[in-house]
Length: 238
Length: 225
Image 1 (cartoon, one colour):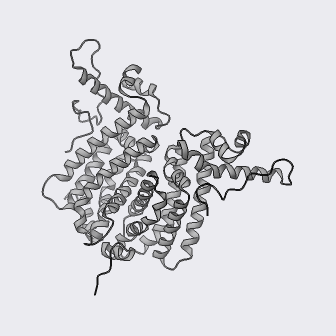
Image 2 (cartoon, rainbow over the protein chains, first blue to last red; image 1 turned 45 degrees about the vertical axis):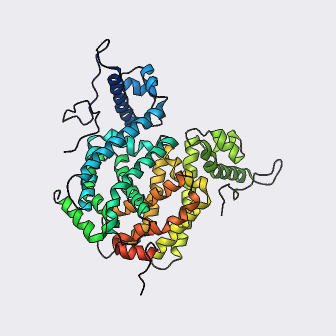
Image 3 (cartoon, chains in turn blue, red; image 1 turned 180 degrees about the horizontal axis):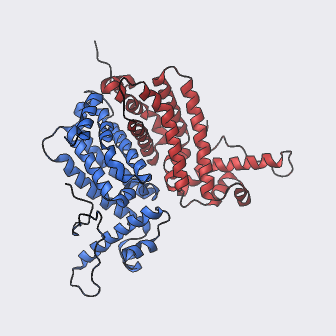
């Protein structure tokens, strides 16, 4: 089972996908400053995701986030310049963890590329299903969070292209536009995740996985091979 | 065709006495406001743009604005809808002039790419700003994507030699959107037409296979001999 987008130092109870990081005891607690700050950052990020999921990015206020997180205004502004800055920091951290987790799912074992990509897609869906507010933040809200956030999104999507490089051997030998193809396929997968998330149907994503596998693979391996891999996934994880 | 500076906009009405009816004037000014939105939001982005910015761009008064629209969101959504209907009409006309489903898809998409390339402010509004303009605007965008997908993608998938998952339509339109989006965001809307081969590859590959699709769209040179 893959890990989750949890703060690394907080143990996750199995029934609570995104743990509310525990509040630190007030007053002197002997914890090093860096730990406190990191904990507060994580707590603020979790609250930002929760508040955005409820109201949307533009109606989200710093006030609502700090109330939800149980931190002071001062603490917030010690860490972030403003709401946008906080959003981008959260986005980058989540995507960093996401890339790490799905990268592990992708690279484990000596398997054909199609099978590895299937593992990656399954990992993406499991992470998002476990944490709908986080999914919404990185898939939907980022699109409304201003131009700098959009640049961060574009850069993050760019990094997923690396997982498609090993699939290029499946393409006709002299075919042009390989990088563009990876971006196109990533855009297609994103749109599917976006639609489900916007409709509040994140929990139904696992049902979509076999078709998602097909759609991701077909531009590389063609219909028959993509269908075979998709059926393997449908019939219980080859 | 417009060049992105709104040169096809109707000019302001003459000042003073003229022979237009009150209804014609209102309609004219409403149209100017609708056409002004892309340039008005391009500078600062939707969130920071004001009703004033739209009025200045359109050359009409704030009072006229509020006679026509509830607020900035209302004006944006109306403008988005107006422009998407305009482009859909052009795409439909181009597609229906062609023979065969592939050529219809190709000409329809080419028309879309040219339309956006020639009006970079509108392209920016259509794919980037719309996502920051509230749920109504996003719903309008989703409708536009669905309409385009139905027009261009469905016939292609329907002609496939084997059944294809419904989801494929969405991933193909998502692919098209992402390619357009990333050029537009980078300020490279002028290069949109160059995306046509890859877009057509995405449209055709599931039914025709990588080799045939790549040959057909010109991403692969035919073998010699």
